[in-house]
Length: 231
Image 1: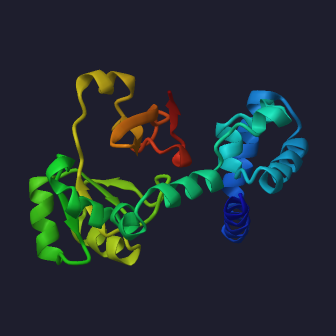
Image 2: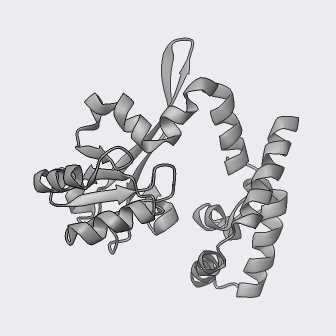
């Protein structure tokens, strides 16, 4: 419990230092439209929830905290608890294998089912050859999350190449064509399944599975970038 509380404090400080006020007020607007409550009341409750439950503005919106009472709010697995479980249940020596997208691609290349390129190692000629094989690309930073820095690109190779290096979007991947059944759900993004697994005593357990999709205007399904999910 002491470890979780310390983790909560560290995460709270990190959130305060890197808060995106435009994003926060966008979440407040969304909560206001759904609940009808005054924006000032939502802001105060959002700040209160950040200190008491360590819930960020995105989780506040996604979890529907505005509709939950005190006892219900205690039942949610917030980011600090999730981080604590991740660090406790997984091999410390292997964390970077999942945090670094390119290292993940290299280790699990046989299972990815898509082409990819590491701009930290490839040069411009390698990039041009890659685009000849895959004219539509997804590019992203190595260690970002929630869809941050992900773009779908198709043209002006030299300018794009220079921009990718400048913004450290070193991960370049083939744009997949999804199954027609998933495409019916939403054709603007690659809709995905997020399956959480836990191995105990050699037996694999699946705590939950989510289907994720975009809002119909973007090419990514990350909820932190406007997408949504359902169990």
